[in-house]
Each structure stands twice: as C-alpha cells, then as structure tokens.
Length: 161
Image (cartoon, rainbow, N blue to C red; front, top):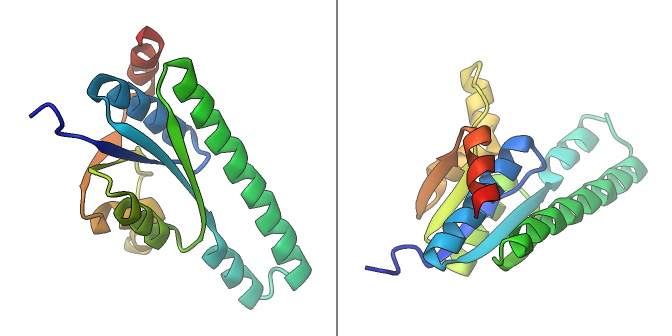
C-alpha cells in the first residue's frame, strides 16, 4: 500500500497554472517517493495550421518552432530547478506534435500512475472545450488525473517542504 503512486507525470506548458501544478507534483513526489516526470510539448500541429492558413510562411514556421523549443527547454529547466531545491529529481520530457497525443504517449511510455495538470481554463463554448489540449489529454489518459488549484496554498506547501 506504500507504493500507491510510483510515477507522476506533470504537464508543463509555460502558464502559471502549469508551474503551480509542477510545485504540487514536487510536493507529492517528495511525500510518496514517486519518480517525477515533467512533460512539455511543442505544439507543431498548431503551427502547421497557421502555415496552411497562410498566416505563417515556411521560414517563419521554422523560426517560431525554434522559439517554442527554446521556451520548452527553459520551462523544463525551471521545473528541474524547483525539484532539485527540494531534493526531488525531475526527468524532463520534451516532444513535438499534437499536445494531447504527445502527453498520452509520454504517460504510456513512462508508465505514469498519475497525470498532474494545472487548473483548466474556463471554457466559453463547446468549440473551446474541444480545442483545449490539456483537457483532451485529461479525458484520454488511462491513469488518474489530478487538477491543481489554489496557487497560494500550493506555494505555501512547496515552501514548507
């Protein structure tokens, strides 16, 4: 019963909510002894759609993808630093493609028991709900999903660790 959670996957997308989720996942990993994986997906599908709609030229697409890859590395390194400060090693996973599919693939490849995500944005329409990648991953994940809320409380927990 002591190993209820062995592997935790936290989805990081650069938002404040995802950083809060990472802090919570670090606290949870520290308390359970679980392995922690941080996953960032460069959304190349969205960039390809912009190219098809002629909003981007091919050169702009490559430049934008490069910028997104740099953002991914920066946020994954930040989460890694947060973990190291609390004695929790973080395995960084960076991939490209359709966000929800890549998250599900990372969960399956690493046999995660729990997906931790930040608070889902408020949905204004059914169309928005369909295109929210984190929500699609949450609904498709084979493992349990924890949605982190209350950033102030999470910060206090993280600082007390």
